[in-house]
Length: 448
View (cartoon, rainbow, N blue to C red):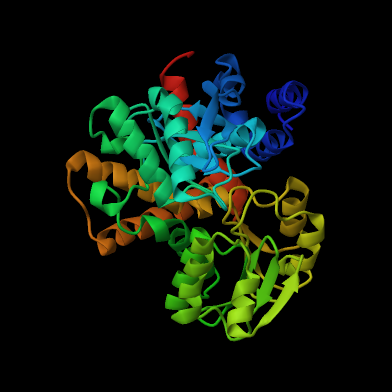
């Protein structure tokens, strides 16, 4: 291992010992880019990696709001503006009890390379709060979002940092936050947010984008092996926007999703979560706020397995779409024992490092999340373009641009891995391609 890289990893492990997710993603990225670092000794002289693993700005703030019973509630808000070398910071806002400083930090680091891979001029950031919108009234969500934005507004803007939605932060939350931003700023800066409602500057196809983009990327992988989506059986996790988009596009292309999951367990539907009532019911489940996939089993009379993940179901392709680190060694062993050929990561870093290596070593083809799920942020950047032009593209126009972006991400990743002598390694290729763009920009801008 390159001594410079190992020194940086050791420093991160010592300095950030309480942040295992950050350490994990730093190791995964830096080990992958070793061939490029070997060819560029000037990186060490410029302290490139030392600067790369340190966020440019970390913001933490109190969010006080009043619930429907008149009781004061206090949450914590975060924004990690990790790297802005190639454009304004870009990354989602996550509202979930699991949100903490360490998770925001690792997601911001990961977002930096994902955004670079998109080919669009956007930097990497992530933010959110430990607020849980589930079970809250619209009025409570509005009051929280207004309080959250009263602090965050001073740190964002069309040319500074452009947040979007993420886990627990959908169109309702974006609308409330943007309304408060507009009130405070006294200006209609619709480029300050993406994921907005269509009437006030949102982009068509944004809701579907991450899921659609993931399947477009998978299509390119299948083509490499002379195969296609049609006729394949898929197992995915989650049933939110991303999973819904994946299911929808797989159905359009003739594949079949036979299992989806939730916090309460998973359902197995041998006939597939097919187009029409079943596919549409995923939206109903998401909107209900119950967060129970068992509702699908009750409605359609299929098998429900409580308290377990769907990776024990045999399929041709596995696509984790829920959250970080949902695949550990136990799940990895179930997936590899299925005899399946493809493991397509969709959620942000859904696989622990040891599990990812185990799956790769088993011979399964692994497509990494920072490339596969770049469709969401890419379409957010397309929304920024539409806002700046004061013009809206049709759904078909946005979808076509998204499809082309995902094909380019795939081809650039393949080319980067081959150039480094690593063969058809999509994990390393994605890191190398994203890193090169960020590194070139950082080197050109001097020591900042």
